[in-house]
Length: 122
Image (cartoon, rainbow, N blue to C red; front, side, top):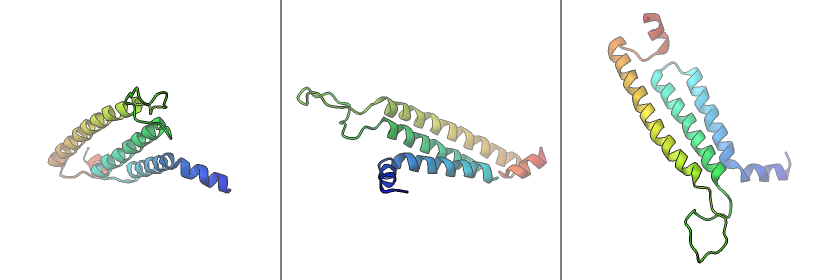
């Protein structure tokens, strides 16, 4: 790995962190048998996607997207990914609350949140 590759990697570290977080969340979802841990893994994956979109919408050297006539011609950061992520956070929160309410109902009915035990009872 050359010096130029390391510089590129450091310049794009949010993308690298997003990939690592998504892989970690995927690993949690696939390996854990506890339903609450699976929901946490899905939330980690969701957060990594948010980080990816925010990093993709960022432009180095750009200013916030607030128009100021005194600045003249400047490069603005794209506000669309930020608005989409705010919507995604609200939807993700509601889906997480719904999933946790279903898990609580399963626990009250079956007495466990372990997937293999729930499949045996089915």
